[in-house]
Image (cartoon, rainbow, N blue to C red):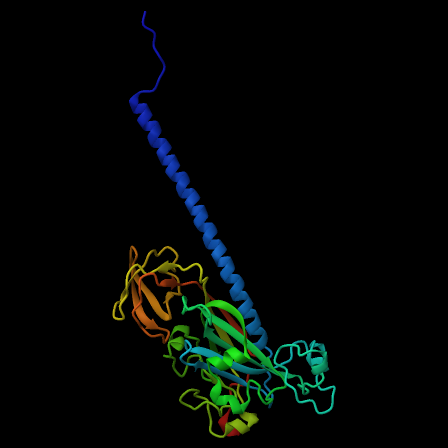
Length: 370
């Protein structure tokens, strides 16, 4: 008598193997997506922490700008030409928490005839008393430069900050004797690095005739009389009218018509130099309008408002995409087009914005009242 043996048919084995393969592929995709989400979240967390620090310190200086006769607000968007076109901002502000609470300046002027200058560092107990009385005010300067030691990433910028007290002291940040020498070397000697991994930082000023920010137009130098300004001269007598529309001859020595922006918008784009979003697969000539990238996975989605990426020192605006080939608009944001070699890092990073109202704003000066 023949006995039946339990078992699987070939068809059943094929079906089971197909189901296991599909399940395995689903699990691998789920795990891959989880790792990708974790990687993106970790990267965004690092970018947010860096951006938050920069924006908070800048805001603290801007809201403390002194609008009185001894005040200053001087923003030069392209002051450091030849050094990446970085900006230079110089202001006079009140001393944080008051002069009596400052660990160094509360001792200043306790000796008769003190003429020393405070440069942000503690000179020690024997010298604090020789600092000239700051009268509640100090100078602050900000500047943006390429990283001094990382030549492999020329598009990564470092933010510098420096202070000086009393305001307008010899050797200080507003010393007229140094006015023609404020270049990259001056910044590195007078200011200290406070943050890096920056792709770009722009300060847009809402002025007397400004009706809108129009960030892209203003950053590219195509602003109009109704848009925000990239330059500001509170004295109205240092910058020419061709640079600052509200300039007026003879105003440098007339503090009564000093003007300050209503608000300043900070536009900050940061990245991680050790985590590029892509690399160039092949050489990109100066006249080419398509970039062959290793991946487009980490680039901004096509419906996102910020579509600018940085390759070396050149900014490009993203267009249509096909696999790893991306159409771009070259040399945006007043950068220069150049030939880029394979392996060039591509950064999009993330953009952060903060609008700061200036408490002492006086940007609606009526000329007839002068």
